[in-house]
Each structure stands twice: as structure tokens, then as C-alpha cells.
Length: 134
Image: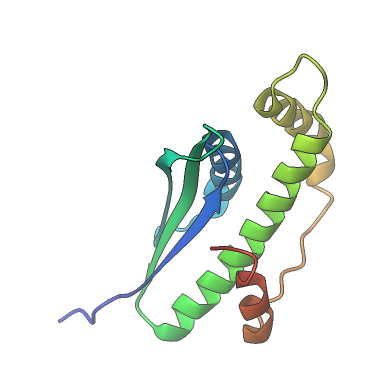
């Protein structure tokens, strides 16, 4: 008999669908077989923009495995969100934010092979990171 899976669902709110889509796209390459990430639309805000959320569901056989995967995901989410915000503030005139981000990714892909990201997997760090998200 297969033991029941442990499941965590992380929902991160964004002010618009474009922001949510950019972050979700950045997260997808790091997803494992136990993870699924999607963008969900919400109702329109008072300013008329369409709200959205990135929703990721993680299922693991053990509590420790679930905790480690959630911790890694939160670190990746923080990096993706920071990069997406930076892309919005440095967008070029006449170029959409998503096109600028795609072009920047293509331009920097040769540099990315030499760079490695150091990830922290301590429980206390993941708790402080999650305070940034809804």
C-alpha cells in the first residue's frame, strides 16, 4: 500500500496577469515531477487591472521532503519575483516588459553557465521569506 502524499499549495498574489506569468515562467524549469505551477486569474481590482496569482502545488511522500522542496521553491520564487520587478523598472521604451525580459534572458544566457546560485535550506530562512507573500 502506498503511503499518502503530503501536499503544500503556495499561492502568491500579483497585481496583474503579466507579472504572474513572468514569475511562473521563471519557476517552471525548476519544477520537479512532484510540482505543478499555474497562473490563476482573479477579479478586477479597483484600478481596473486584472489581479492574478501564481499557484504551485507540491506533493511529496515525506514531511522532510516536502519541507525541503517548499523551502527551495520559496527561494526560487523570491529570486524570480525580484528579477521580474527589476525587469519592470528597467524596461526599454517601446518594448513590452515580457519582450524585454525575454531579450535580456537571451543576451545573458551565455553568462548563466558560469554563475551558480547558492540556496539556503534552513527552516528559519524559509519562514522569514514566506512573510513576503500572500
